[in-house]
View (cartoon, rainbow, N blue to C red):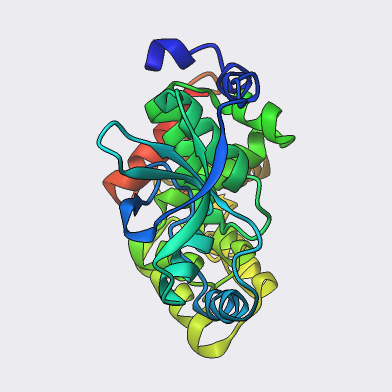
Length: 287
């Protein structure tokens, strides 16, 4: 499957778009014979909007059928419409209207799920990141291809993927809507895990703004002196202090530039605070 999809996301989606849909049909199927899509990007469903949909279905019925793929054993796998399917179950329906697609490969089923879900504006940043990661890991699709197909910059895709480096507690907060994506992007720039969790707690309890968290992150290393006498007794130039600041901004961690015995030598020390932090920094350096 990896080899078949190595050419990029366009090839994946074209397989779906060019699929012969003349055999597709809409019919009512037992709601309990349907199982969720294994590649569903959405991991969290808002209970309030789901309850509203349940009420709408009770009053007006299902206005848009779900899409499923029929297995050989007669059961069905969702391709698109998990939220509608969940709402129908909650509304007490025994059957659900579905577009039944046949002769689809796993690649094509994933493509339909991608088209249906990954471009939804209300999909949270962590679910987007998990979908990107799944495209990369399961289907060997590059960040460049993902960015091109979704109309985003490669840096936007990379920044979204970086959110997966946050602690699980913070990721769940993003999925639940407890903090915004802006808060999350500011938090990821705080290299110290304890300080990051402390800042996350303040967002929840004090409702501090994204701007305040960004300022805290930017000043995280600014509290230590930049110029003056180094630990080795030599005076540090403003140029070295500036270079440290630029490297710290790039890598999101503490960086020390120590001049050597001559202007031609010295050393750069890059600090990390966890194995996850180490992996994040090495990925940046490899780019």
